[in-house]
View: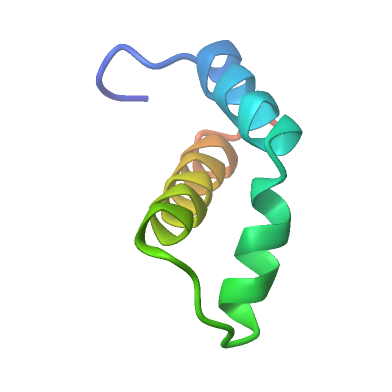
Length: 60
């Protein structure tokens, strides 16, 4: 991982976003529904973090 991120720190960020209900925003975005700018930013952040987490094979 780059930027000093660790599997644990990325997982902690994902957990925080999970508690905020961001996965529902990701689902809305992927189904083509409109999101506000702030909601889109959170959904995009969640996707970036998830890709980083999975790409680093932290889940294995």
